[in-house]
Amino acid sequence: MMEEYRLTIKEMPPSLQPREKMLNLGASTLSESELLAIIIGMGTRNLTALELADLLIKKYGDLRFLKQASIEELQEQKGIGLAKAVQIKAAFELGERVATITFNRIYIKSPEDVKNMVMEEMKYLDREYFRVLYLDRKNGVIQKEDVSIGGLHSSIVHPREVFKTAVKISAASIILVHNHPSGDPSPSPEDIKITKDLIEAGSLMGIPVLDHIIIGDNCYVSLKSKNLI
Image (tube, rainbow, N blue to C red):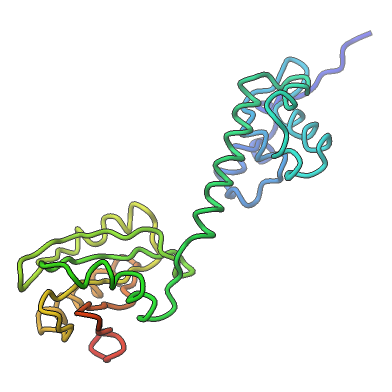
């Protein structure tokens, strides 16, 4: 009796291969089994990575229960050795950490939110610090970075320094922040000019500048709220 021939993943049409499907259509188009198959990587002599993934999901019934499985329990599935079990656990741990970061992320809904985030740290600085808040599409703060430190009266800022991190981390928009060591947050003509230059640069790059907040001594000014930009 002839042994039944089975296609390997590499022999499948590209549109059915999990990696190719992800590259061409994006991760959101993949099923749970297909995503897990990419993590597993290689199958066995008798089972493809996709079939192994299907078996694991059917065995545990839900990704939540699969996540709770120990490395030893995962290895009880034929075809899942120590390396594959560790890869699966590592993937779940990464997802858990991303979820924690997202949960703790600060979301900016108004200039007051920016003030609350930076005031205590910036109001006592004896030099001008030019800071950028990098936001996601929901206005959550992905990262904050001091891009320039000036003297007592000014801080020189170049668009390249402001936007290089935005491009690197795929920020959807940015908010500019700097302090006035004098304690008076009133914007200078230079502050307004720099802001307009950065707004223009952001427009060309598709990364809008939402506002520029100037921090004083327990007070602040939003250039957008003052209709200065």
